[in-house]
Amino acid sequence: MAAFYRLSRISRSLRRGNSLLSAEGSYLHSPPPSNPNSNLTHALRHLHHLVEFSGDIRPRTQFYDPSYPTRSIGAYRELLQSSCFSSVAPNEKEDVSKNTNRDEGDRSWIDVYLPKKARPYARLARLHNQIGTWLLAWPCMWSITMAADPGSLPDIKMMMLFGTGALLLRGAGCTINDLLDRDIDTKVARTRMRPIASGALSPFEGTCFLGFQLLLGLGILLQLNSFSRVLGASSLLPVFSYPLMKRLTFWPQAYLGLTFNWGALLGWAAVKGSLDPAVVLPLYASGVFWTLVYDTIYAHQDKEDDLKVGVKSTALRFGDSTKEWLAGFGVACIGSLAVSGFNANLEWPFYPLLGAAAAHLTWQIWTVDLSSRADCNRKFLSNKSFGAIVCTGILFGKILS
Image (cartoon, rainbow, N blue to C red; front, side, top):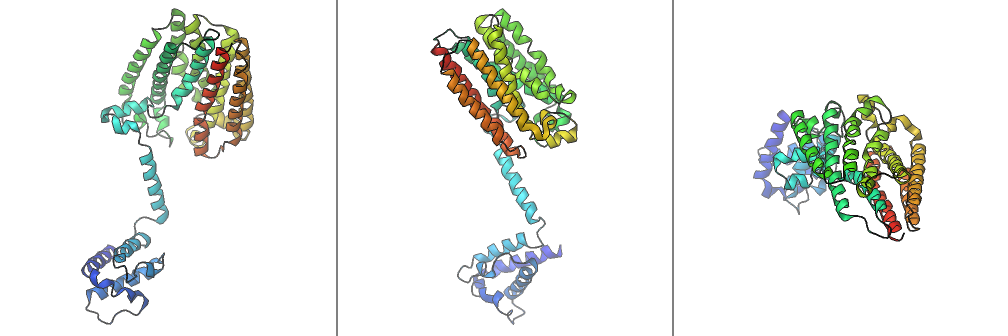
């Protein structure tokens, strides 16, 4: 308290003597003035002691140049921040600044356009981050495009229905995940601020919102044929059980692949009214292998937290051999896509674009820095491009067939 009292007295003295400070600016380079009754002299003497005590981080002439009298306030501020009288250490101040910037960067269109009461629900459905919707939608688009008649474009209405369904089902899956994992999410840095884990929404509110999402999804499902309705409804079993897999096995990413790529089966069924195993099973398998690639990379962001909490993942299972495993999954993914395209009688443009997709996947696997959370996230996000390349190849292969 004495230190802050002295700083307060210095501040008042500086304000009273600011007009004289420029004339006295050379004081710090010369012996203190001889007039002990001067308030300005008293302030400057204390400033001199503070500079010496704090280990001045810049040449004093930068702050007390007589040609810039307003530098005195800048000097006082610098002294307060860099001296031992500051209550925050320099490194801590840098961390606070980084955290502040990070929080500001977390703001999205949800915080700008939605009412305050609706924001937790939108975040629960991950409406601010749509990469999951794309990853769920691409296998549907592959299948619908492959099921189109030779030389024809895919059914646009069906594309729109499945795109909307992917948005709703992905949101419902996130809600289920957050309800079942709310105790785990509070212990993981990346997830502790999710709406249910943070207390922004109660489990009851989350359950009611889940019912609303499933009701909207039912409206989409009822517009499909009877076979597709049964097939689509059966996807709820893996959707509800997936969050439990990380407690039971080191392969939850494989189970996610079985869940996330259900659209590869459903899209074909919605167009054809049945399944052709020679086409849809390799297509479904390719999606599962693809999911193993991108979600294993994603899981490396949380492996330290997963060890502390006691949950399992392929990132922990593979360890230092992760890239070798991912390379194998990548080969299986591209190979399965080639088999599916061959059985669907796709023309030659499919294969060069499939080669481009293979190059993209290879780059993603061998260049990712698995020790960097930021790089793992960047490579994970790049899978949206992979899905688009494959879909384009199927589209051109079908149009020219």
